Image (tube, rainbow, N blue to C red; front, side, top):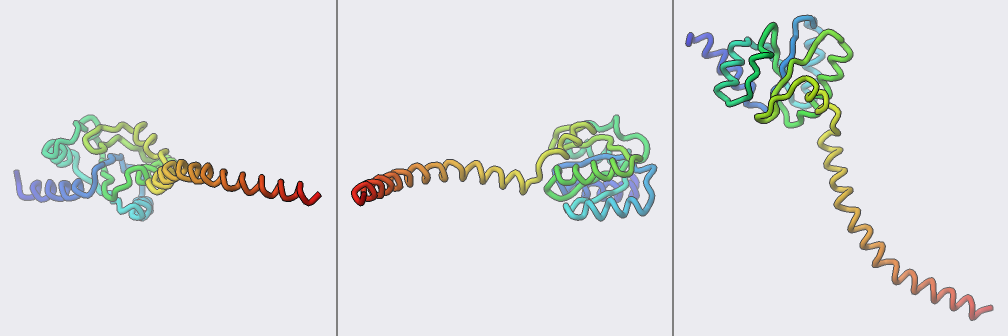
Length: 171
């Protein structure tokens, strides 16, 4: 392999090391300004947008045991990688592609699972990691609150009974 290709392969591998996911997109019809806008939106999730050569990405994917993405490696291809919140990144991509109406997701991989564009869209509709954590804490907290309420009900009932008895004696 020529030195130039080895350098490009090392660059793509460096990018793929940044996360457990990679999303592929066609970037042919977006402007430089729109690309910068997308990169700024992705940076909130520590994700990055990189243009890559299909042949180099294909070689890198095979050396990393990623699923076969050959069907998507046609035409101009960019990868989105980085950060630890694929759902949040998918939300950013979905909103950007919907607003611009000229960019399309080709597909991607999450861990070692191949994702098509529809599955990435479904991923974008999941709640964020922080919301999921809050929901889990709420679920874990509910039984404890119920238990405390039950324990508290007995003394409250006794107090209400004594108060009623006292009021009955006063009349």
